[in-house]
Every structure is written in C-alpha cells, then in structure tokens.
Image (cartoon, rainbow, N blue to C red; front, side, top):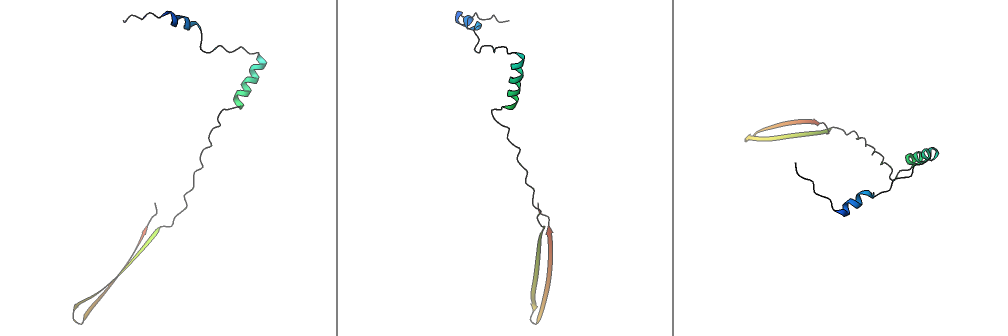
Length: 92
C-alpha cells in the first residue's frame, strides 16, 4: 500500500474549525413550530402538470378519380371508356 502524505500544520489547524457552526438545540415547543413552518413555506412551488390536449376527430379523406378516355382507333370508329374510382384513407 502507498504511504499517506503528512499534512501541513495549516491543514491541521483548520481541521478543528468547522465551516458551518452547529445549530442551537431548540425546546420541544419551538421544535414543533419550526417543523410546521418548514412544511408550509417552500422556496419554489412545484410546477403544475401540463394539461393534455384532446385530438379533434378528423373525417377520413375521400378521394374520387374519374377518367374518361375517348379513342379513335380507325376513321369512323370511336371508343369511349369511363372509369371512376373512390379511395377512402384513414386520417393519422
């Protein structure tokens, strides 16, 4: 194991003195009051949870395609073809 370094005299002096002094011991009556105050007062209130927005119902998309083809294969012969297609797509 490695040997520990010796501490300087300044560090040894600081060791005894605490950065923050101990709090005074309160009487039983005062302790009850202090506990009540601690629970009531808060530095920063908790943030309220955000309300969720309801999705508005959307109507399904309806797409209608109508195709009309007029052909003239030979002189005097006319062919007419009609096609109609409807597609319903769910929103989302």
